[in-house]
Image 1 (spheres, rainbow, N blue to C red):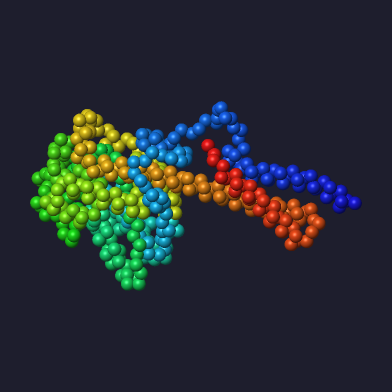
Image 2: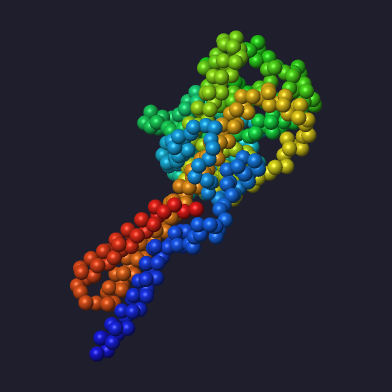
Length: 432
């Protein structure tokens, strides 16, 4: 009698619990499917488009989803946007950092050796510029950068130098396994707004920097004095006025980002007589765009937190501390007229085009990854609800009794299948 009474009480309680769980499937917490709607008005105002704000405001780090469709100047494919590297730090994978002057590369380089969560962190001793970044259990480096291997391919080596030098250097460092295995090299870099970068380089040179020990190797040799004449006589260019800095035709600050990302062998290296200036610029820009697009990763100085996010998504690594955006730079403190700005933009016309291309690609990759992340999170929540549902239903059927274990399990699976069908259908509803 008592058992019959308990079952009579159990049935309505189980029904209420089942309805509550079912409601969570039809109207999950992260869904708008069950929100009240009006044909005349929207009860909830739509989010403002984030893409335009990202283009207009430096490092406007909004984490909102972008609109589904964004007017684009460049036709990037999903392959261009989907960047995920299964980086095997225990195996033969090597990260190669192409450090372009005055792009925030020093800060980013320090993040690589001091700020990544690793099983075996880089060993950075006080007072030493280089850190030891070994693979777990191996005495070989997984990182090729200024702060790990030093300037092993020359001071601020460019794409042309690194792609021919890095494999040789890394195989020499790992002589034992050089013949047994083939390393995978993943190139990364940082870019910066060309005008800000140019002004920053001018200020740096004005304080005495020269980079005159850079090799500029191309096709097996450095440029001759005639191919790359010096902009100054003496030890350095300390105190150079901006006008003189801009007036030197062989100044490597001009279009530096394109030159350092392009394959210089395509244009005869530093031999300017091999083709017309217009054709040379066209080839260099196309090469720089292709190399940048095919790199494992690149970041933008103006978008520090998005740079951190995309790096973590690309390599599956996590930083310990968040990146910070510093807008009070030396370049930002330089006041220039519109006429001077136009002159700098003209001297860096190729860099201006490259940066426009890079910025859209960078922001679209961010958009793509944010959307993918939200999809992954929704899938995880759905799977968790399904798991809880399965457990609840199995427990309810067990407490209700009335059948064998096989029958109870079959009924539970059938009930879960019906609920999953409802969720799958509701997920196809367009949500605003």
